[in-house]
Length: 611
Image (cartoon, rainbow, N blue to C red; front, side, top):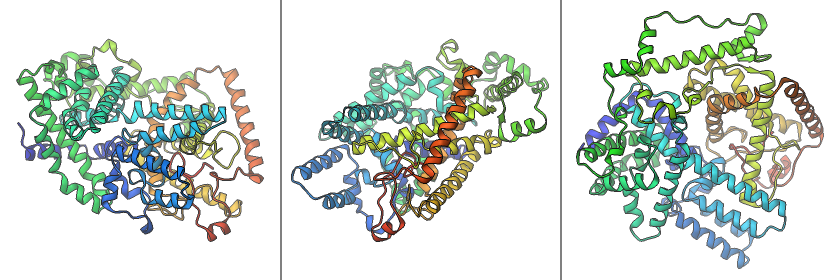
């Protein structure tokens, strides 16, 4: 068995080779609430009057304490505790130590333990609602939150383990690995396995010591599913229990050996955890899993035959690679195929620098197909050279895969109509997200934003600007992420400044008290969310939406875009003199804020309400 020192040493090597990717994987997990969420102290609300003891943070982390706090809240309501006293208590005992911001909403709402908060809040609001429409809206919003948790947060740990396992052997891990389970048509299956594991873990946590023991019994389930996503929940959990038999204490001691990094993370408000210790820990445990796997296979543990992804743990020989990538090796000695003919003049300039075309012509389709072949060829060449995982040697037969998910078609140009529809799609999604959060938490409908229609233009404008202005950076995801943060920060800051100047100082969002905020108009938390959202738009959401929009006949598409633009322009013109304002929407006049500091409610992406 590999010693702790050797596991850490090997883990550091893999971490060094994939530093930015590993940090990004763990950072996304923290933002989603899948794991490492406590590391985000550096970007959460920071104020001397809101500090709390380490003991209260620790006590507030368990799901049972969440239920306890909710029971206390019910008792206060029954005994008519005054609202100021109640607000003060909530301020002193925040759920999971999170008070404000989108992360407080998302992490508190959809992590496996604290999802109870969302459910309890929704049930309370439903039982007290006499409005049928509001009742249906709350149910819909709660269901949407559960589905979001089930298909994203719940199973993201397995996604991250797949990336880490590939990174320990191979020099390259393509960005397509984030949708690995989609490519092999196992996303829903893995989500169910992780859900059952979480449910069992929660039930065992209700006992005195069962939760601690089962935590380590089920410890390898994400790794097992990352290797073989075809296993059922019963098979994966049983195999993990068998592999961990006799090793639970060893795993506990290994976790305990990282206590120094945890203490350093507390002293640096989570910064060292984000930039180093979180990915380092997962990388080291990936090495440990590889050795547990060898022991299980060598010892003939029942079920070990399911651990059959051989080339996830060792590189295939050159002869094997030449056999399965025969045409790739043959193409390596040939000159690159001719590129599709490029557009010229103004059209060529717009297409090259901004990725915008008037219409998706046959010439544009030829360009996209050429780029798709080029990207796919690069992935195949890396696998053929042994630098990346050979997908053709995966245990899941090639014919069962989703061919369209083999590579993400993110190198493309968007037509004007497609961009118009994306603007309204992103705006509506942002509005729906923020309204849903208020329905669940407050039990009331709040039409978010300065406009009156169902759209928050700052989401739409930010998404479209990322696609257009950052077009040349799509081949470099890290630069795309950093540029998205910068661009969205500029847009949000000057949008807030413009609204305040044109509406007598009224604010639609206020980040005062947040760590690294600038005049209360932008903050580190919101910008990080925008950066992650921008990457998701560029590499996943925008290509999917564009494929749908291209199926709409031109005679329907153009009039529909014109109609949407006309309605939006009318709303903007009316809202300029009669802005949407009120409780839960705006923060009031500047004079009111001076007399009594505003306590705005947060919305979907770290913002108060969309401009």
